[in-house]
Length: 116
Length: 115
Image 1 (tube, one colour):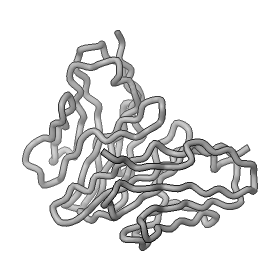
Image 2 (cartoon, rainbow over the protein chains, first blue to last red; image 1 turned 30 degrees about the vertical axis):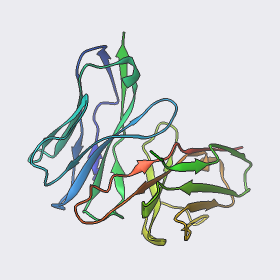
Image 3 (tube, helix red, strand yellow; image 1 turned 180 degrees about the horizontal axis):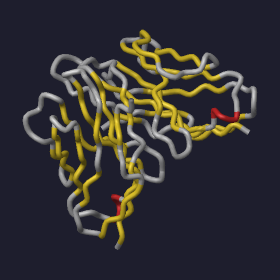
Image 4 (tube, rainbow over the protein chains, first blue to last red; image 1 turned 135 degrees about the vertical axis):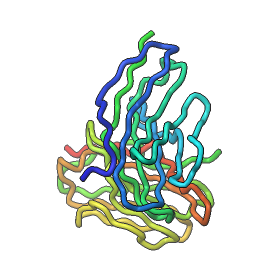
């Protein structure tokens, strides 16, 4: 079974509007971490936001927030006030366990296009 | 702040040649990870090292090997290159410990083209 599922291969959003990128995950481990990364066309992988399985509150980092619904196993990324520079590929990832050496599972990504 | 450094950024090789990719983690990070990302695909985990010892292994071909050195830098050695090895290779590093988020920070990647 897929560990991370991103069901939106591509999305469009108007500049200055908010957008939600979906991510669902599958794990039986009670301890895990959820991550979102941004990959612009230049190729680098940029860390955006982290949510731990025991965190009580949804994570926020500037214009990024993570809508964490544990019972539904979803970790959607919300980008507020979209900017042209937000156009990129976005990957959701999960690490099972709390160990530093636990590998990541990535979703297939969502390509976001911000329209002027 | 210092980031993960990968070299070279671009590499062109021919079939059956060898290649060595280098990764310098963020200072004080104790774990290094290697990923392979094919065109239009998500990154696939290859291998990781924690405190210079292999900690986990993913879909790394037998033709590839990697190690982490005493200064924590890591090298991915790839032999008998095949056309299918053409991809973007990422190195990531993290720093662990109790209560840490163990966020993996990625380098800019090495784009390998096998002709």
